[in-house]
Image (cartoon, rainbow, N blue to C red; front, side, top):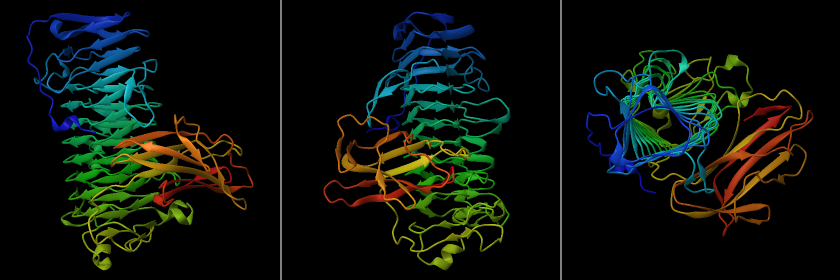
Length: 522
């Protein structure tokens, strides 16, 4: 799967005379043709009404007046090409701060549809576009378009007094978009903001194969994600900055996401992870996977000898393995990992410590390695990071993975179903796998169960689902557990695993969620 980023989008020239002034509602299907532009949104916001489709051809330039937006209640099909991108910009672009507002996708907007484990089929799409000088270039309000192969640059939010962010894309409650192979450059979220480029709140975007560089926010220089269960995979974060705290590249807050095969290089934060931050306020069953990543040469500018690590600052990790982690610094000193689970928070013993076995640290000397960590050995307030079996050579290829996650909500009512989410990620060539999903109550034999997901044409064999995974593919979806609820007297586990069809060998590692007494505990 080729990335458009390898061929930078070409900007197109324009005549200063307006060819088309547009505003108000579009109630019928409308085409903006390349030969008829540019299009000037002025007066009122332009609204694509329910039942209507706005189609924009390659090469069209759309200029919006200050504080104007395009509001999509129906369908937007904007598909540019490498040499003839669609450009969304302000009428005064380049003369000062960002002025126009957003492409706002409402809950009623037509969502994109896909083939299972494959690419875009239909629905709202923004692809092959340049989006620049907006306040929040794209806002998703419980909407799920396909956003791919775009360049987001020079977008800047106004000062935000409450938690928000995302100068390029703001993904709000209930949205499940695909954000694939975009470039995010020089986007800034001002004020009390998470994510200079992307902000996610209680939504599940698939964020894959994007390039982030030169983005800033006070928290999470490029990406700020709160309460997210979906995968963040194959992205490159370079030269981003959290001007306050919490992850120069990315900050995950109360999230169960699978953070897989990402590269974090040369990012900066004042504290809590120059590269990646995982929030201290996470619930104990809200732990992300951090697997197969390269996290090198990131910087924390803090002068405090504490958990404010240059590489990763984290509390509550489901798993941390097969990562390259070295060359990160705090105040000029080696500082790869800070583990700041507070023992005083009173969560179960299993959540207080972290096993860092099976990572590459550019040394196999465990005493030298431990000097780059900050954990319970440095402060009695924190849990312990255990290091053993450091990898002798750098990890050069990510693995095919299955991860099983749940929400951060505590389940107080006995009998509540447990919403689970399944991620399948295949970063390499096409391959076949067998998927097993298993529930086991204490004192009972394990029982295979199948997700409430349609895998068209998938064969079933001995309780396993045979799947053909395309090259560089990601699948994310909910698993129904309506038949498997937590009873007051029961506890146990749900598990997911992948196997080689020919040999039956386990691929990667088992993904397991523990449950007990009506509360989800990972």
